[in-house]
Image (tube, one colour):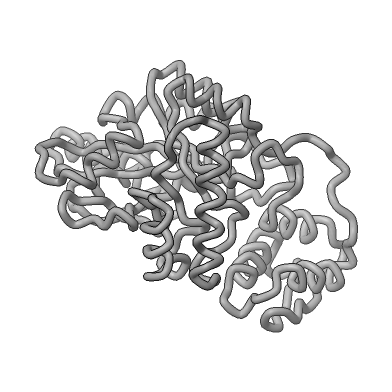
Length: 337
């Protein structure tokens, strides 16, 4: 890809290293992961942010070049922007998949750094596929090469022309759209179009359980909420938004015996949260909330309820991450590669 070539050329020519030795801006760069490992043909492959080896290399590099901060320190940065500092990095994970505990946590602990894990409270200890993985499973199981999905908008799917991953992105986008007001109807229509009515036979647990969550907390990791059922908040009326984030907060606090002040918005682009979401967060006692559409957080210019995160995408080379972080930090803008 062009961006991979650009990052490699910048590294070979020494441009990336030159930027890294220049004075850095006082800012907070938040990096977001979902899963660590290799796609298992059941889950959405786009959620696998890096392999084990890549993640270990990334953590080692970031620790060497930047200050990796905890959730509490990141919150302090947003609340007290006048304090002097430099570029710091917050590592975050969404959804609470089991590989976060089995793979990511041992690497983080061995490197002596903290990360924040945002949990969907109804998923903890669960082996039921969430909607995005279920859509991936259904599409991966069909033998039909060309079909229409009529809800929420009529969409033609051609497996031979566009391939699995491009069609999956289309279906996930349709599911998240405002036209989809009935999630069960969407899945039903997809199953009928694909002629796939079964679910994965595996009973393997997909998400961390509460004992594992407590263990990573004792090991220096931080915990936040990712709502109770991963609903896109802005699609819900205010009362339902309050329920989603209040129930999640109450469950996590009861299980961990500590306050939960941070939330990451499901999906996290600008359309996924609203003024009503801010009201719900205030009402439920949250102090900070994280989006997911890119960007760098500058002192005095960042809303506590819109702390921006940059995605670590599948198999992103270390050169891309190096260049993305340093150019974003130097310019104060998102320069994701």
